[in-house]
Image (tube, rainbow, N blue to C red):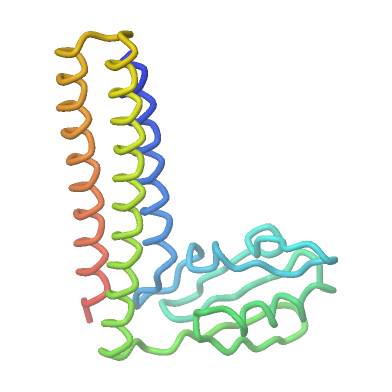
Amino acid sequence: MSDEILLEAEEKMDRAVEVAKEEFAGIRTGRANASMFSKIMVDYYGAPTPLQQLASFNIPDARTVLVVPYDKSAMALIEKALRDSDLGVNPSSDGNAIRIVLPALTQERRRDYVKLAKTKAEDSKVALRNIRRKAKDGLDRSVKDGDIPEDEGTRAEKELEALTKRHVEEIDKLLAGKEAELLEV
């Protein structure tokens, strides 16, 4: 019983770390990459659709992105979604593709992105702590109901703490890497 609870908690914690990786990938560094656009939704025929499903991305140089819509009629919608996004870009269309020139990052903007990364890391840590709390409640309930012995419950709680600590350290390591990448000029 305790092993099932720990296994479920570990799977959820692994997913929380994956979400943190995706969130960090969406934070812009000095170089252009397609994952910056992963959270952008376009109102396509009345339904919010991820931009990744509506266009392909070409990156000819470090600060330029070429967005080529699969459906040319969606070009104005894509351009509007890009303009309204939190990327702070001004896309320009030539009829076939949308060109985005990313401005050079100022030191102040880099610090803002570091703060954003720290916020996302803290959100992930909160998610880990919530998973730990739910698993601990499940273990306590199992001990109380007599499903598992008290000493096994104590051992499982120690394993749960070690599991949580390992995942928090992994998020801290991801954050440190992203910070270094952001502050690199």
